[in-house]
Image (cartoon, rainbow, N blue to C red; front, side, top):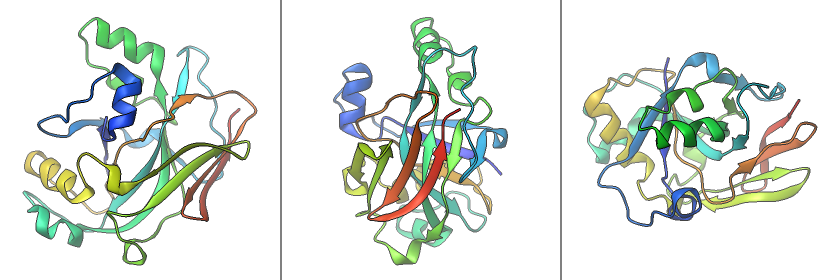
Length: 204
């Protein structure tokens, strides 16, 4: 399986990240290895050699069948479940690599950088109108709705599937809203869709 992720898919996050406000012509795509996955309830251990680590809460979509060059109007047939996940980012390393004009995959793909909550059937939701949030020690730090995405889920799937075949079990991290920030050892993170808690883990 593979983990596909979308960068700067919420305008407010793009503004806080680098001040950009124009919608890109196409989704900004990067990938993570499967060794990045941490399942719900498992601790995240901060790597001591990576500097600042930022949390980025996102809706994650799970692909349920093989697909290539999927039209956006049919994309909803290719995923069956969603959850809240965290795309952890080694921010110091990312900024350094960007400044040097280098690929920044390593700042996103280190072990443990993709935390997954418990999945729920997508049929229970309107994928284009899902409210989700992240709390740290019970304080809301990120809150958004998928209606705010620059590129909706189905458009992302259509775009990505032009380049690589999607397979059962693949995951798509759909982008983070404003409010991303550094994690602190000893804190407690919880992720929600609406009022339902799907993600619950500690930083060690």
